[in-house]
Image 1 (tube, rainbow, N blue to C red):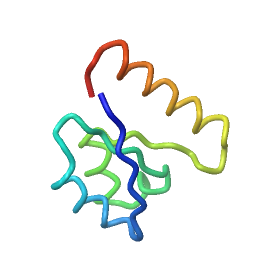
Image 2: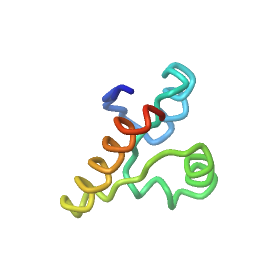
Image 3: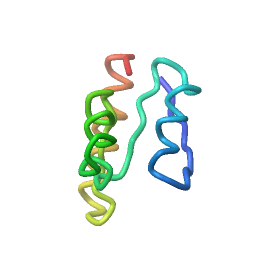
Length: 76
């Protein structure tokens, strides 16, 4: 398991990144993307993990749980 950190400039950049990142990598995106109509549905269906950047503790919990799952199960 590994983590890639990308600083994309627009919401649609995420779709381009999906083409170049390895198969076992799952992006983490801001929760606001989930509510962007078709883009949100596509992100949700592709398994993107959403974090709430306005609630720091919740975001840390989601990322920590994701890291634990990646380490213990050695999966995406």
